[in-house]
Length: 498
Image (cartoon, rainbow, N blue to C red; front, top):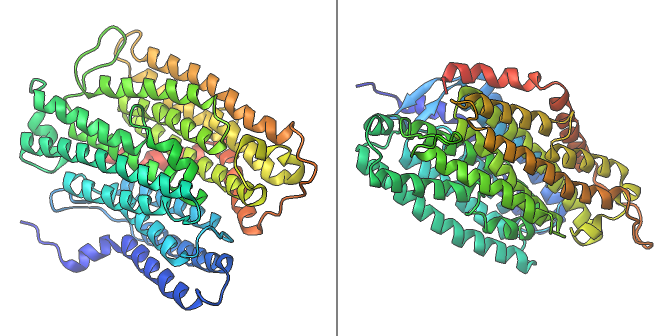
């Protein structure tokens, strides 16, 4: 039996510990200045401390690469895990940077601390193959997100969003826990690899089928896939902009990755097939149906939205359908495509919500009409929004286009027969074309519609403007030169043999 010292365990968990200490430091620094400093100043100080903590955690991961598998897969550290953790931390840096100068809550220290605790949950979530810790990490993340959604106490929409999020989330957690408990009963193990060995080459047991459906339901809620999406529009609309950005970006990245790992590793040998005309029972056909429904409903309902936040919510449902194609194909190439697409999509959403937060502060709303004539009032802000919307629509040469190309190509190459998964890719391309309509509706208001006569120039905080421009340039650069990112992604994935 291999013994591991507490010092070695703490060394492996040092990035998470840095974040926890940073969260406590933010609380300690904010407490004495809460009575004297303005809310915007407190947010700036807290955001700087939070960003420094995240950068410190990134530096620790990069400086000391680790390789470990402890306690029956409870803690798994490797190059691919550390890469994902670095991406999550980088997205958190962008989110807290967008909070500079905010004023939506007076509980500044608490807000930033909970955001950091959510990031700790994400980092633990992607670094385990033990279903018990998966559930505990997921609940740490979920509970943090429920609280973040309710932080704007002056808004009844924020309270409503948090309540719906909590109720739907609690129900989905019960389904997920039930499915995981069935897996444990069938395999007598909490390790995904050992679970796969126990169920491999066995007929599709009714209990195994129920476990599949329950787990797809539980994770389907986390990634806002149809028909488990009902919470998303209300939460995206009611939560503070920074909270909505966190929910829709880094939390989604962690959710998709653990969804992929549970299905591909834990249910290895029970995949089935969703190839055209050659369907066989398994989890792949279930995920394929969820992906198809998400793409269709998300894109069609988004057309009717007049709220930009709700538009992005239904757009997120559609993008969840696109990303689920990586699970349907479940190859090494599709996992790389999932990472590229999910991370660049998360960056784009952070930028879009950053623009929305500024428009809300200046115009008092986030309806399509509130964006009328934005190009005359804030040209740099409008240019950033142009890049974000076109990238979401998959227009070259932006990262969104290459992400979809990579995702669709990996899905096509995974088909085992002539038609294979062509039907699913064709549907995705058709729905991507539909999505251009509502993304262009936003840009039409920004660049063509006339602003109200009494409106003046929008004052954009320098820090937020710099962050938005950096995100927009990154989206452009990653679209024009995707190998800059793909080379970084592919090396650890090959080592991990996903």
